[in-house]
Image 1 (cartoon, helix red, strand yellow):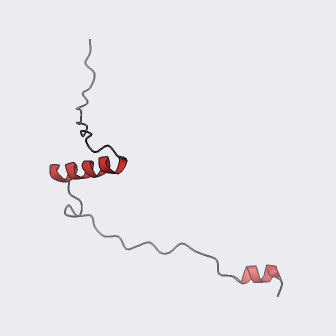
Image 2 (cartoon, one colour):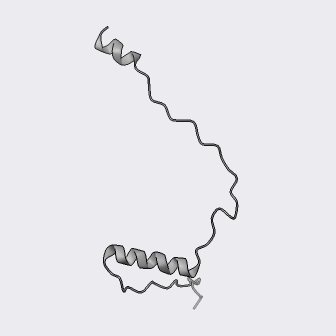
Image 3 (tube, one colour):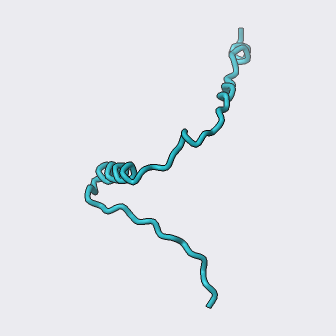
Length: 67
């Protein structure tokens, strides 16, 4: 058997079949509580070596007003 014949005899990798879809429910993903957000922010700050950094506040973006 030649090298080309061995190569052609190999299995061709294929993509696995897609996972079965599950309906999205509101219980699967819920918003984080403020305590969870604070704990996550603190863990991020500790990971980058800035443990006392204050979490940024969200700003409300308003449309520009006509002059």
